[in-house]
Image 1 (cartoon, one colour):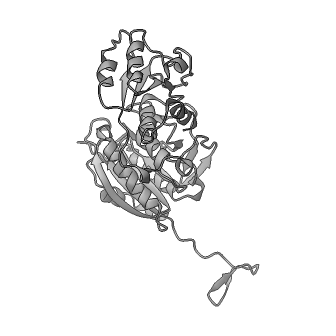
Image 2 (image 1 turned 90 degrees about the horizontal axis):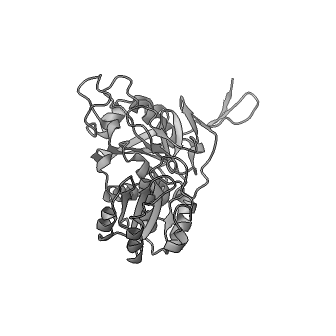
Image 3 (image 1 turned 180 degrees about the horizontal axis):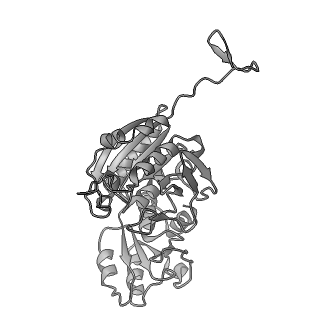
Length: 350
């Protein structure tokens, strides 16, 4: 039993009791996707229309959020994520950058379609200068489906964004009870709820509102990043070409004639490039366009000067980033005037 002296509560041992801690303030920025989708019936788990439910209805359907945070919602966009553009990324990033500067905002949650969720999470990881938690979340089933995963994913996302131990760990993705790094995670399955994986494993788990951490990111991110979305207004134009058996050089030739700053080559194996495509990429580099060797293989990493003499050709390797994430990093990095050597340093560090 505690006694009360004036306005201060004391425990039986005479130690002042802590005042009830105010709940954290979390802002949910909604962009659409499956988590805001609806199907014709409860049996439609894979056939549905994305981006149909506005953020206010998402929040109204999850009153449990009030137990962990003071939550506000904003509708930034309402689209399926395969239609995300660089302009959408910039709009979202600028809004987050403004919000995290506010003293009355403790964490950010972004609801997002799963098709390009990994790209947005990595983009935010690169350009938002904050230690406050930023969590990107989606779902593999619409809320109208049996065993829909969106509600629990969103609850977990808000819980993580409201937690102090999530601060400073970069942008996170919380799906299927896992705490994933926004840098590492990728959509690896297009149907199952455990769709998002990292070859390096999750950072931890979130279970019943509690975070359990097992590792931390070591690549540069957020508050330690040299890139700041407040300092540029558009991403550099970067495109991807795909390697496969019998591939012609025509695609590289065509893309190389556009106004791009970098070309990501999604090669086979260890970022391999077909013999007939090598001269085309050399010509692209001679025009001042950066050439980045990535791989279409989902795990492993591209070794420099293996398969191709990158030093000789003045090419860059994407390290362990898949082609779509390599595009994001190049598009951010080349908002600055970087040499190929500097760009390679960025790929090693981020």
